[in-house]
Image (cartoon, rainbow, N blue to C red):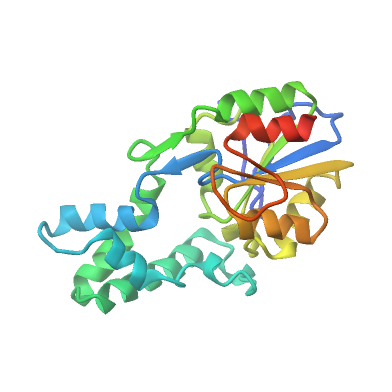
Amino acid sequence: MRALVHGRAGARPRAHTLRPMADRVILWDFDGTLAAREGLWSGCVVELLDELTPGHGVQVSDFRRAMHGGYPWSTPDLAHPHLGESDAWWAHVSGRIAAALTGIGLSGDLARDTAHGVRERFLDHTRAWSLFDDTLPALERAAGAGWRNVILSNHVPELGDLVSRLGLDAHIERTFTSARIGYEKPHPEAFAVALRASGHPREAWMVGDNPVADIAGAEAIGLPAVLVRTDGDAKRSAPGLEGALELILG
């Protein structure tokens, strides 16, 4: 039985909480922190092109350059609550993907067909998604120490479903995705939404792999943060999640 249900603002509250009395929360980024997809968005697009038209000649780097600045999280200063429904969000992003593909020489029909297929392919957890080796041990250790695990990520509307399919239901209390709440990290309201819905915990930390969206965004509102898996300018950093927990629990 699935333990999570959809929440309108992008949260997916569990039917029961891990530790109801705990007043300490760790906000975890998802992509690049708890899990990863091989090739990310650009890889997903090229995979589809390989199937639709072998020999297309488009490289991952080609699409990445063409799509630069085209995702909602590319402009985090702009709120987008009007894209809070899945179909609206995907229509917006698919349009940007199709435009990027036509910009590098693909026909309009091929660009639209490819963009239309990205939704199903990107959400297919069996193809290229995987958890990092330290993800489950870290979440279990945090919960065992009395912390509530919450995901806050710049991601797709169906992130909660992806979290569930990757087997994280038992470890994550709530999932907040920017696609549904309408704010992208490092926008302060992205963090505020998650903290309000978590009951304004007495103590909270952010853990993520992006020095700007995760770390600078959290610290800008006074939330301590740990940068993981990435080199970057940060007050606190660790190579992996266990190192992050040493800093938090210590």
